[in-house]
Length: 266
Length: 253
Image 1 (cartoon, each protein chain N blue to C red):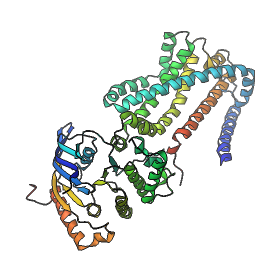
Image 2: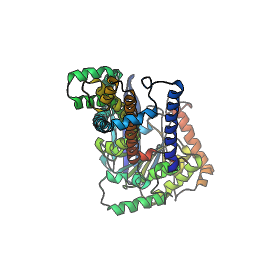
Image 3: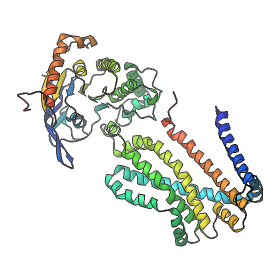
Image 4: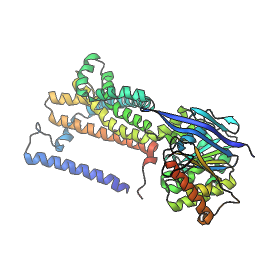
């Protein structure tokens, strides 16, 4: 049993609203081993994004603990990389300068040339070779998201937090990027947390899928996906994959309160 | 392309002047009702030196007022953009202040600091032009998507770093939009003061002396000179915008 790199125990959190506290997380447990990749799925508005902000140290939970690499997360740390549904590239910078942005914040031992080499290497990995001097506005949505992934990895983070990064892309681009993720992971070891609405994406990318219940969210169901080598898109169309998707879909229905369950009083 | 860029506005101006001339000629108006463009060269050549001296006075006071408005506007915009409480507190004050016609403030300021021509004029140019800048900066900062902030904050960056690296450059297009409005407003402010304050300076005073001496072509000549200066300053802002916020301009595809 490897020690978990990300360890979230019994986290509770509520937002203050005009109508009183709005609980979003209510007993959340997630544990990711080093090098693992966890996908978190759940109904809309169940607190998945809150989870990413907790791991990133952008906020503190009301109750419960978030641990990264044996240290309790109290504030942001430079060992985290983030990518969102919105690629949030800076329009006034070239793609290369966008990718290198985190290195302006995080202390690094790399020289300027090494930094640039690394950025170019990452861009090459995601298929953006030759686009380093373009502006974000000259790129398509999928290409911008690729650049955003490079930026989230440039400073060699231990943890990569992906908050629905492929949500706004068309189906074909999305599948392309899934494969890109696998090639990135092969070259750049990281521990990943992926928030997604796409069940196929979750079983294709992750080695563990966590289903959250509806708001306030707690861990409702955990599915392990055995991996031997990077998957092919065809693997999504096997009876095995269909079974997994069916189970997950059923769990989401329970979470939404549309299907009865003994664990969740509907 | 560049020929077209220059030729089109020049032709438009020539057409405008021709129509103006035609209007006066068809109606047979004497120049105390409306001077024609053909009356203007005489006015310019007779008062050439005054135009230079007073035009410069108007220009520098407008620009100084505008620069103060930029500094103050950015400061107020930052305060309102980053703090909800300050936004709630300052917005009604600013809107109320902006709603007061500045023509009514001009005599008050002129009496308050009587004799301090430069100070008065710059003050009014500033007062009339900082509002759009403050509003645009505050809106630009308060509508910054949280993800932009998170990208840097999650790496441990300070608020100041987020401001310099992201919030400020991202607000530049809105800022320049507001600055274009502020430029013309500042000219209005300067001239209001120059016309109203006794023994004024600048083109406003020249306009006023044209009025007292019933020199109608001179009054129109001043208006055209003001318009010319307004255009020049406007395009200076456009050039600055191209340099600092040119990235916001999308290439037509």
